[in-house]
Length: 256
Image (tube, rainbow, N blue to C red; front, side, top):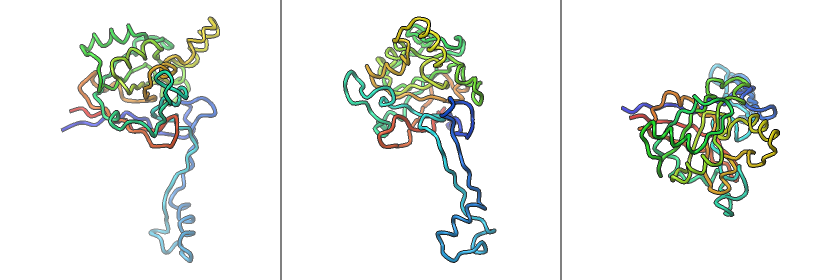
């Protein structure tokens, strides 16, 4: 019987795993409060008409589409993809890309802020004896996952530069993912190098690679450490938000 592994973090209010201004807010309406709003839909109803005097529970969320485990569409990176074509939004995600052969590489041995190269990817693939190809989803352990739940999560782990990203896509991959805050290395590391060199090519280079070749990327995955390198199915379907740059997903691995 197959084993299913949850690869998504829970969306939690006030968790400092996003920059200030982007931290989710959740208002919980419990059953007692829900009874008051519920009675408004049934004129004349009293608490005695409800089981134990209780009504429905519900929640109100204030968050961006980039909170929690989510998938970025090419529209997040730029208005165009594939050298001039209109960029796809998250509601245009091809459903056939939502089921893939999972390939997980562990880059957690690399230092925080490291910019992963195509050579690094090829070396890790050689170590597991796998040739990347169409139908694969590429997942990366960055070293950031142990820091989920704290502000350190924003500055931990390594990430992918333009060269590595384009090489992965050139193998026929459409969906990639990481357990870090961003597919790129941490913004703070990028900022330090940009301030020192004023080299604009260092800014968000893994994301901006999508201008040349469109792709969908998943951020804030979890439990990648308990997955095998290959031999599992990966499922990732984003919430359908019209014209949006991203959508939340429940990412799942199926291990036979």
